[in-house]
Length: 544
Image (cartoon, rainbow, N blue to C red; front, side, top):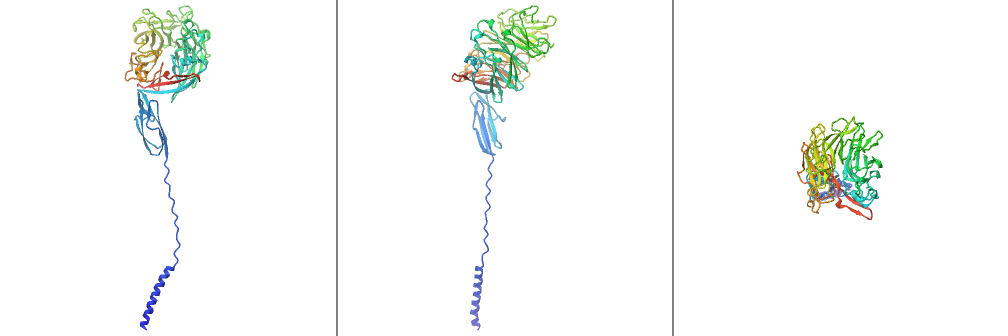
């Protein structure tokens, strides 16, 4: 029995094992879990910024910029042209190679200097305002009367109209239209053509105060000097508009080579004085009452007791502080060796006689010059900082131009201490301006240069100043006061430009000396469209 049971047990054990295995195999698998993968988070889009790079006149930049990812670093190089030097970037950096890291939109410009001068040029295509071609080109070319007037942060470049002075008589020469250019951060970028009230034949001198300016029309058309008659024009700026008025009537026209604003009758209303001692008294209505000067040579009813020929240069100024202006004058005469030669006179209002009487006339006519020079303008300033106002005079003759200084002695007498004469082949000027050009506390003389018909000179317009055969040198325009009323030409560095013009007018802007004029080398008249292409050029000369 035992032998039989062994196989049975073995079979049973194998069966159990087989069953056990098959049971495991037959058990249903647990349900599958389907895993949905998490979506991949896209990489964030980088923030981008725009870099704009530009170059002002006088150079180039290595890149004009573009759009870049935040944090991108870019190196930009400023490259000056010939005759120019790099000054700064518009962000204030003075390194010509600048590293920029983009963290915002950036606009940056490279500034260049023309041999020590900050330079801007603005181009215009001017439609001829119903006048002859010669009048338009003369106005914007050979114009001695351009000047800059500043009021309430507005800057006006006044360009008085010029007629064809080659005409035989005034009646055949229509007045030229006056232009006004306006300055903003981009330079002299806009202009207007003024109404007929502002039209003139030719302006040499002007006068101004903080409210208005006046122009003296020195019409020199034809050979008959008795017919050289023009107007006194008053301009009152108000932002982008100028109110123009003719001070005189047609009957009161004259040779207004010089004009001056002042007070000649102690009524606290400003008056106007013109050549020939023509007086226009300001009235309470805002107009002017005319006082003639037929008895100017000492008659009982004369406005001024004057024993010389009426001057072409004079100025109204209160030297003694009594509230009433004196008249300082200088003759335009060829009388060397006489008392009239190179003369300066002071006339003071005599209350009892109700006229201006002579209180000073120079008695040393040859002290400054050994030739006769003719006075063309006078300006009064304190040149030696002693509290007394002094006299500066511009003169001319056939050989050249000059300027001189007369120091106030404190008693309405004056002593000449300085003069400078330029020969025509050396330097040409038409009057001058006075301001502190180098911020040293002393008033300087800044000449208004001109080319004398485009003829080369040794120290302003000369072919050697430029590769194209033309150019300017501005050093002789700048005469610096040493504090005593004596002057030295600016010589720290050469101020040379490859551009050129016929006239330049100096002015001061934020302490920096500027000269502005028209580049007539680029003049191009379009006969088909009756228009003229011009460039207004402005040199900023920082000599502080």
